Image 1 (cartoon, rainbow, N blue to C red):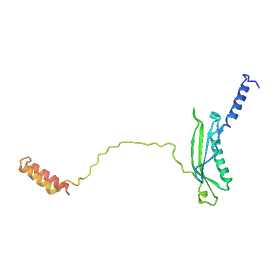
Image 2 (cartoon, helix red, strand yellow):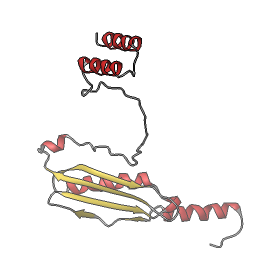
Image 3 (cartoon, helix red, strand yellow):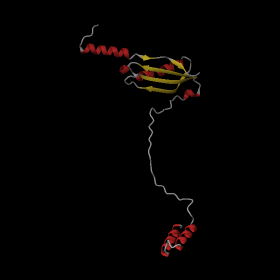
Image 4 (cartoon, helix red, strand yellow):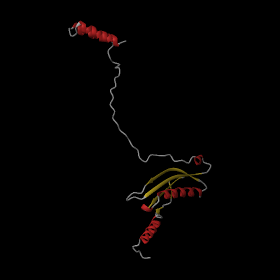
Length: 172
């Protein structure tokens, strides 16, 4: 087949490349992490022609098939995915446990959602808070001080009476 410059030939060539590239998925297989916990990691090297969703479904199906081959069931533990972007292929990591069908864990098969991004908001707030000071002098002490100021000539009799009335009114 020779490549000409006709649009149909170019489209056929692109479809051929896309079909070949879409099958380029890195598959290292099932990795044992502990006696009952396993990991499957895939990288879709199809680039723009890859299919990350199909890759994820394939990984989960492989985990289920692996557990079924042992007469057990796969319980999801965690998953992590990264999308394809320039210079990076899409990836999917799936951790799962393999348990007996009679295991209570087999009845609860949901992943706990975790945030991909955490946004922290820091904000400064100023507030004028007036609190009663427990160490404030009592009424008797304040009256004694006012009387002392009057006796020294720093307050007139009228100022003393006004401040005394103010203190007595505030104590009610």
